[in-house]
Length: 280
Image (cartoon, rainbow, N blue to C red; front, side):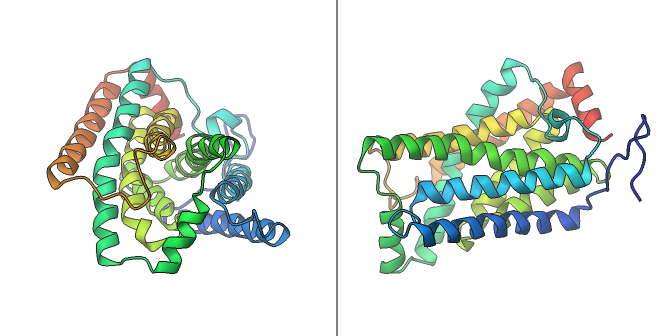
């Protein structure tokens, strides 16, 4: 039975950390169902990266609504999603974290590719999906990769899911469960370590600031560097990873900046109140 809120309205059912990945699987199932439907209706266009992102964003939106309605029915939408204002320095440092995190992520991706190389067919399909020959296609890709993708993912994983889990779970368990769910959602097993690393960093930002805006900013910055690099021709999908020293520097910068956000957030009365709201 739902616990009543202060005004007598049911506050919603708790979301144990162990069940968070189940919601991620529901989101994945909804996204893949939409993708399969669009690919069947438009075989020539259905398999491209823009359509894939649109379907995943739509699937995430539906399940985000489901989590909020099932677990947080009495909460205003902004509170259920963790949409709370943060100081400018949180946005600035979060953006830097997203950029720095790209270096260790690219290094991990390169190591995985060397250990488990893609087949010629997989590589060709990947290249075709990322074909950006026309200006409208480039714009659509930028909007999907830098906007719809990270925003929809964060509103689900670090928004509704995180908010519902944090009400009854410890901080570390909430971050870990959201990171695991985030990694599971990325389908490709090669992406699992990178998504898990990203999920942990983004989860810590969400936890320490009490706002999904911090993690979303870092996520947008991360995707933005990749997207602009691809569109500008400075990056290719088969580009080699960074040198070991540069990857280590990027990891060190990511950890140092995340620690700085955490330390300064601890001294902020507004962010302390936001963290308190998360646990209510």
